[in-house]
Length: 182
Image (cartoon, rainbow, N blue to C red; front, side, top):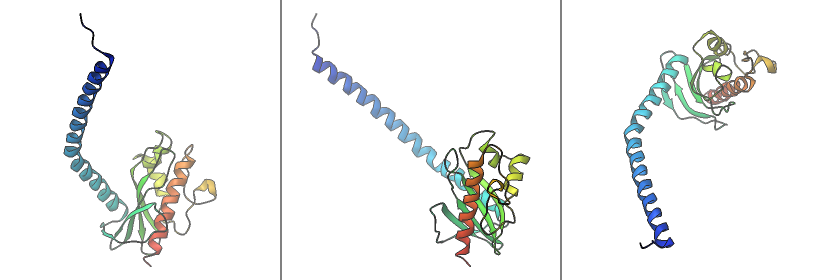
């Protein structure tokens, strides 16, 4: 019985691994090319629903100048503006839409995507009364917005101060951005 040399054995294993890796990479690329447009359409739908939720009548995307990189899009409507912001929360960025009327008052907040802790920071986006009350506490506010724990008027989610402050920071970024429109 003849034994294979160590060099040939390693080359054969490496070639086998390379082929397997190439096949899997091609399969993943194929799946990505099929699902990417579907995911993009779903994200666009969520964004449009968020615009409608915070700015009755919706709006059209406009060019903007922001003093922070938190702001990613601004929509102008008949009633004011909807500003898409992504402040950093406890679990990462909290992607949200903030509606602001022409007088500079918050019309509403809609959280599009987050990775906050379930039953703590995730309450900010919850559809139940706790989430609605938290988001609703920002409605009508203007100027510099702070949560109650910091001496402001907006509610703080119990046990989720970082998330509460992040939402307030996002609202402040949106208010600051809209000031540039006059």
